[in-house]
Image (cartoon, rainbow, N blue to C red; front, side):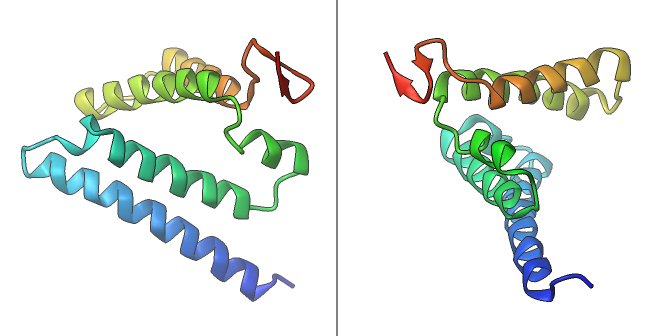
Length: 123
């Protein structure tokens, strides 16, 4: 049987992430398109998505990689994913042969450590 409190927590985290995405979509639909260009909106989106991912029943090593301790590789991963998302939004089409590998690379970068980090400490 599923834990209803855990499901409610995941639902709340997902709803918060959808609210941020809806804000961006409303901005896009109104023609201003400024939300996607502001760091505040991206920070809210990443924070809510991270919060959702941490609420999911993922193995501990995956949860630890979502803690965003490696900001340089996380930023590169987010940029890779957002470039594909932007392409999909503007063209309205998904090319799985090129988009899926780029998204997977972005996820890999988000989970990776920065080059100046070894064993959890900065050199």
